[in-house]
Image (tube, helix red, strand yellow):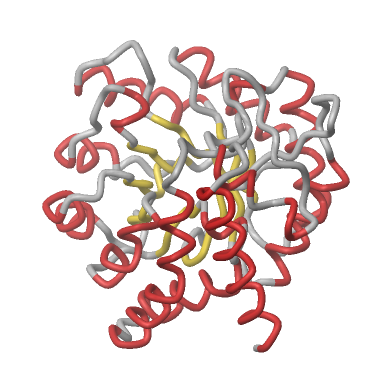
Length: 297
């Protein structure tokens, strides 16, 4: 399973009446593949997984698998707060054709490190898919520590970590854990360049929804160790990265979809659409600037 490079955590477009917009989702998938994206995550936190009904999850993932048709890996978000629910969802994702599972640390319940170890091992043993661990303490209220990752990486079905904690210390620790059968993927667009230059194999990105070609260029340069080119690409993306920080994910990234013809801006409650104003204007300007660069290239 070659999960590395520029991977997009896909947004989930909805219609004006709140239904799944699979037509727009198809355009988003095509946009990613045309832009060089090397893998997609379906129904992760950016995809509003917790706002999807069971049948919607199934339709969304099955649609992505069919549309992608094996050209790049399709990674399903399958993390739940409970272990049994996570195993069940991972099995369902396998039945729907996913290539791997992105499994976030259990949220809200705040397990111990031993609880995290046993949780991920159970999913790896029983879920039927290769597992990418996902650590995002700002959302889950628990932190999968590097020493626990080190224990988990020996399981053959656990193939990597998406680490969203972006301190220099954590980046170094994750890079030291990486090996051919266990990849370190950045989960933070703002520090992705630094993480990949330190030894990360790629990034699972939000910004790639709106600028797949520019983000692929960053990943190629950084994973090749071309520091100057990577920093140049990072500087080009910086205005968009900063613009997306104006609201909790995925509110801002969804506000960027309409200008690219990739869907409406509305998320589902309790998330609300980004209001018109300076933040939304700044976002539109950043998206337009990168779109112009991509078209010129």
